[in-house]
Image (tube, rainbow, N blue to C red):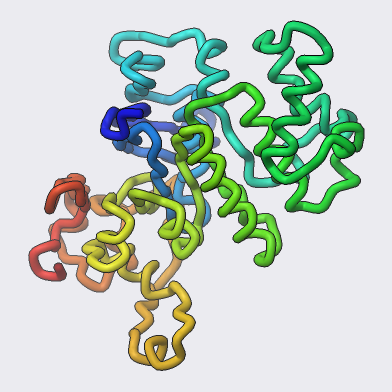
Amino acid sequence: MDENKKLVEVEHLKQYFPVAGKGLFRKNHVKAVDDVSFYINKGETLGLVGESGCGKTTTGRTLIRLIEPTSGKITYDGNVIYDSETGVKANMLPYRRKMQIVFQDPYASLDPRMTVGDIVGEAIDIHKLAANKNERREIIISMLEKVGLNSEHANRYPHEFSGGQRQRVGIARALAVNPEFIVCDEPISALDVSIQAQVINMMEDLQTEFGLTYLFIAHDLSVVKHISNRIGVMYLGHIVELADSYELTFHSLHPYTKSLISAIPIADPKASRATKRIVLEGDIPSPVNPPSGCCFRTRCPYATEECAHSFPELKEVSEGHWCACHRLNEIG
């Protein structure tokens, strides 16, 4: 597999949701995703981190067009599947096989009236991947075994499983159509800590076995840096920093990224005491009424007048390391 070939690319992606404004005809918009650009190479994992409400999940869902974008361009394996400028909107059915999603909540994402076998088999039926019932059952059992379940589980219902087992069913459902790319939308945040590591390790094994490409969305940077090749940091709908996992962890540039990294727990008590926790002042601004200029300036200790006037461009500071900050030279 050519690991340097871009599988997924998004350019200037925007996702605005209308909300009622004051007055009879006034409408505001929540800028959930605002001018986001990145790419994911074949076989790699791109992590996407940030606080709750920063637009991570919306980015993932918009990318595979579960929600239609407001504007921007999405390219999959060299084919444009959405482009607001040229009006291209590809039929997504053939791409649904190639692009799958594992949802955050294993309690809400599985139909309680369907058996696990039917949940995993539904996509097999839609895409006509089995010639007969025996082959269909073989694929279902094979997928369940890949995620650590067995053939007996196929006849049970979701309520009979624990949270970790349900998430495994969700992963089996995504794998059933033999995809190339999976959006992992906070797949472990609803699970017990003891189960999280098992699911992460399993996902890494599956990636190696099937040659999968992941967009791994989470708010826990310690998990993301473990599984990701590269990491993008989101704040209020924007990507503020994007770099190789090691580079981002040890040579972060953006004040927001520095704060996130300082919050990662360190097992060594001596090293933990030596590191200084960077605590951000204030709350995240409302996405309905974001601050002018740089969206992070209201909580940034380095903000100046310039930061209030214009949003900083996401620039490549060193090879593969991108950052959006007016004051990089002073704080780097």
